[in-house]
Image 1 (cartoon, one colour):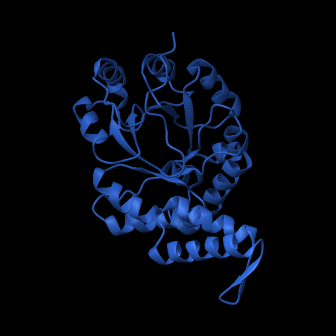
Image 2 (image 1 turned 180 degrees about the vertical axis):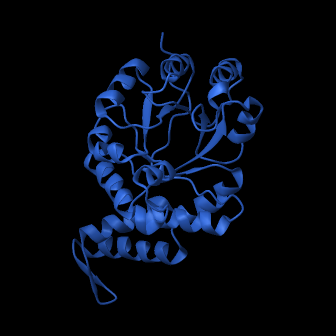
Length: 274
């Protein structure tokens, strides 16, 4: 029997999601109150292999918080824990399931079939996953993609830098757009005590077309959200553009620059982010 989705669904637009280990149910409520757009209860990387069964039991018996969308990150399809993770997810009131190590559209489709109406957030963490990203994003139950940048860099043997990962990030944004999905979620910033870096990483993600980011510490939430917010100058420009086109027709000149429908679309998206 599939439990109905969580009463608080995943929001559209910006999605900043905070990880919390499945082995720490006493932290679930605190994570939910930290101000993130969603909370991800993690059965994968945050849980040692010897603790997988205990972690599932802890989640199954915990009083799950309400008022914030909850996701469950489950282990990949090729792991020995995947089937039990799916069984647990089917019993919980979740806004979505994050599938680790998503690499084949057919596998993701089978997971979706087992989960019923629950939304999926496939985590792209390998070259094979990136190669299948467009097909994965097009699956009906996929809410949006997420980028596991650290695992991806390890898989390729490349540096975990913006330059090295630029092409991968651009492909994920393109895959999401082609499928008509929300912009993908960027990977984590590993520096826990550098809010300026977290904010700058988020701003870089926005620049590329991402619409969310994964965070691993409550202290990263506010700077990441600040990174996703447009600057006062961007907001002022966007309001000027929309106002000019509303008053003047399909094509106008603003400060000596031609402004038409595509420019208006960009301005409207900035105001939506604001």
